[in-house]
Length: 239
Figure 1: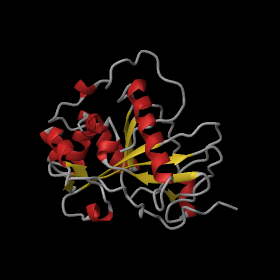
Figure 2 (figure 1 turned 60 degrees about the vertical axis):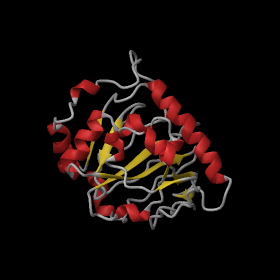
Figure 3 (figure 1 turned 135 degrees about the vertical axis):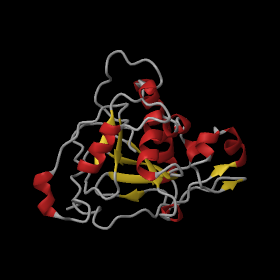
Figure 4 (figure 1 turned 90 degrees about the horizontal axis):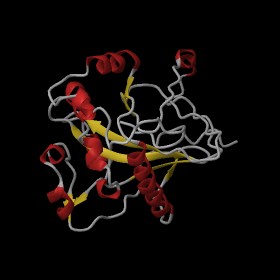
């Protein structure tokens, strides 16, 4: 799940924290979204959040990135001027808003089943000068089938982990961070590849809808995450 937090300019008329959440009651299956996901490997919910909410996410990402870069293994390189950082839910003020958004809940339930698990929270941040990433797994024959998406601040997209994809160059003068939420089917085992945790006080404050899908350790004190989510080939393009 990727709420986009970089430019371009905001849409007019967005003032509520979340937009159009009544379109997706808890028991509703977003049929159109599922069709997109199974056909193209990616789908989206335009205007899911307000620009104000996204700006707050941007502030938290900026703080988390500065902290991560201040210590060894805090951020992992994903190519020239591009980094990936995993964070704990408490580092993102909008975490509960994101994981309880009706569209997110509906897609997770429909694709992964009622016992889906939230296993990863992080962000990909290409700075000015970030280059085109190679296609993940480097299958050039897929390039002619690429479909360019044009997300705007406040949109959410959902992508299958099996979808071949890549990051595009950042030719602007601004960073364009993208928040990443990893959600898994029960038993898939990907939670073991991530170190997300919450403190006991934060756990007690979470709605049951969130706790039911958050299989991470509950601890007294958070330990900064050492990044290990590397993907072979994504540091190419530095020449």
